[in-house]
Image 1 (cartoon, helix red, strand yellow):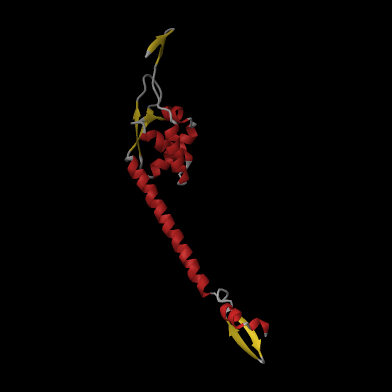
Image 2 (tube, rainbow, N blue to C red):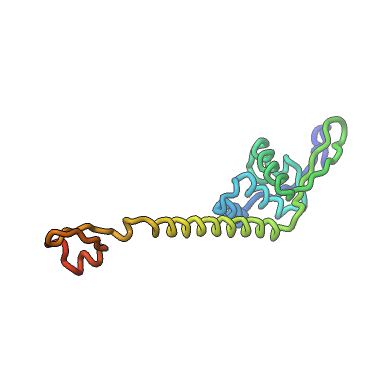
Length: 165
């Protein structure tokens, strides 16, 4: 703190997301993590704790974006918050920190994506099973051969040269 013209000014240092941090945010975004959540995870992983205002300054997010992102972190029980009483009057300041190690958050997304991939592969397998029961993959043809009808697969049809009769 220092005094300027009779006013006490408080100095503080706030971490700002750098290029490597933004790369981490982008990697989370590629997993379909909402931007506000990805940014908060990245910022708080690099800070022991931070106030909403510090988060806003360090991430260039607006207060509503911080609130939305915090909601996502709360839903997963990844955030702890406590209040610090301010000097003088006014509401206490909320201070946030991640309540789980970053590795656990990454593991959550890894498990989520593995589950989604397994569900996708099950759906593809089911599509193949259903398609195999349809007649059109067999491409059955009815060809007349000197007064009688025969049923041919496409392979038989081509090899027997039935289409010329």
